[in-house]
Amino acid sequence: MLILAFPDALPQAQDLARALQLPCVAIEVHAFPDQESLLRLPEAIPERVILFRGLDRPNQKLIELLLAAETARHLGAREIILIAPYLCYMRQDKEFMPGQAVSQAIIGRFLAKLCDTLITVDPHLHRVTDLRTAVPTQRAISLGAAPLIGRFIAGQCDRPLLVGPDAESEQWVRQAADAIGADHVVASKVREGDTRVHIELPDFDYQGRNVVLVDDMVSTGHTLMSAASLLHERGAARVDAACTHALFGTATQRALEQAGIARIWSTDSIPHPSNRIALAEILAQTVRSCEAGMDSAC
Ligand code: R5P
Image 1 (cartoon, rainbow, N blue to C red):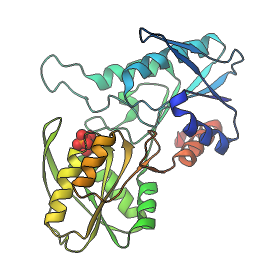
Image 2 (image 1 turned 120 degrees about the horizontal axis):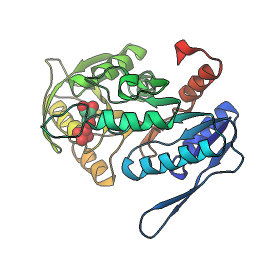
Image 3 (image 1 turned 135 degrees about the vertical axis):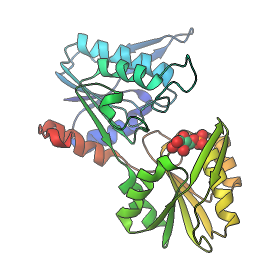
Image 4 (image 1 turned 45 degrees about the horizontal axis):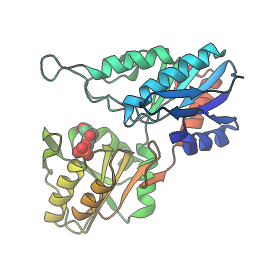
């Protein structure tokens, strides 16, 4: 088996390669002046290939993934495992307004045609609860980072209180809290626009607590900023945050700090300065289970 990594995901792919003791090769990507991409893969491709790429800022990446998968098949790959630690377009899972594209289903079918197995981490599934419904490939494996996040938090904070900023975060915050026996509560959120959210905290004594906000992804940061302001108003001693997918840029990082979030940590599903929690080991365990044909683990 060979790991083929896109250049932007190379450090994470190399960590996985070390854990699995597999060779890892970077796909050559040339960007033409008109923004088209030219890819080059090694000529000697084994029958089983892992394609590694996170799918944040996805539009160009999806086209390049199509080019890579088709080329790998042309060069002899019979089985493609796509490891996309961040899976894009999962939030638009219904037609919220008439005429809208249901991106989750459309992109899901696109990805399903490229690979035999998909491995991802904390995909944003809400109304659709099963990954294979969203991405109907032969095997679709959804891993959870919450226990890793919980254990990381336990090493950083004394007696943390974990807070999920909205109902959807309940699944992650509960698992992270259970992993370390911490208290947790879940707030409610109404999103009024891309950068407008209204959050209400549940009744709880936040006075003097070391709070860690836990969510699957941080994008504009407004969810965390609103929650952090309320927590400070209610007397929290300190507010930190942890997420699986860090989709935010440096301006948002500054805004998060100004909103009173002392530290923010993320997994390395997306390369980002906040990365502190490595996913290589849980990804490696999953590949090993698939190799061993342990379908229940897959
Ligand atoms: C939404 O339900 C997600 O779990 C996150 O809470 C959300 O995507 C965060 O987005 P933002 O950082 O833009 O508020």
